[in-house]
Length: 149
Image 1: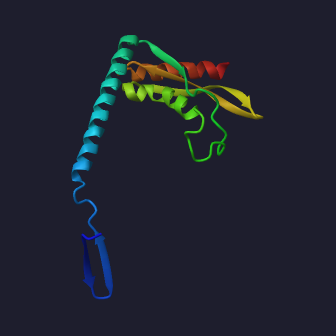
Image 2: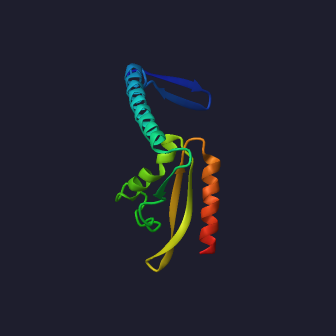
């Protein structure tokens, strides 16, 4: 490392290495790639948003499961969430409303027994853009029905 600078201060020595010299063009190139990926993601998000806007009317709801399957037992996958496909499948369900700027409510509707434990089963309702109050009224009505039954 021929290009370094030292600053001498009574009682201490500090060593600074100039590692960014000549690397700015590489960082700029990486930033440009990031912007291209961002632009592609925005175009894709807008495509999904417009497709769901065509599909959902003012009083329509999209009903999907909250999770693709019972969640893995805590600690069974370790720290690596890429093991198996549960998280990828769960994200494909939970990201729809966020990507498309739509209101979503998830609610427990039942239970299943897995490994001797009762696990809640959830249902998610996605409403049309701006129809948040309608969605909440439907959820209130569902909740009343589930409490009776």
